[in-house]
Amino acid sequence: EGFCEVVVPEETGKIVKRDNPEMAATAIQDLLDHPEKRKEMGKAGRAHVKKHYDWNQNVQTMISIYQQLH
Image (cartoon, rainbow, N blue to C red):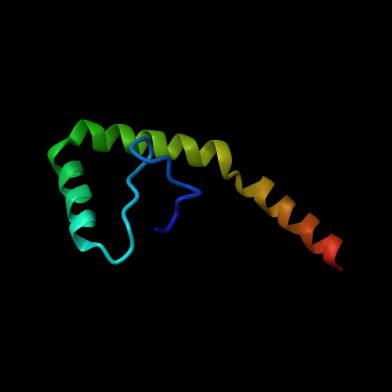
């Protein structure tokens, strides 16, 4: 179960249990069968990343943490 903190289930992507190939296959097949869902999840995922994961802000946060530790 990776990326649970990044993926909004059924909005920006799908979460499947680790070591469960049947669940992964079902999730992939669902996206293959529903191209509009796939397209909307892609758009929503991009918007989510742009909103929550700004590179410059992340760098500033890391610098701040390193400065506090030093």
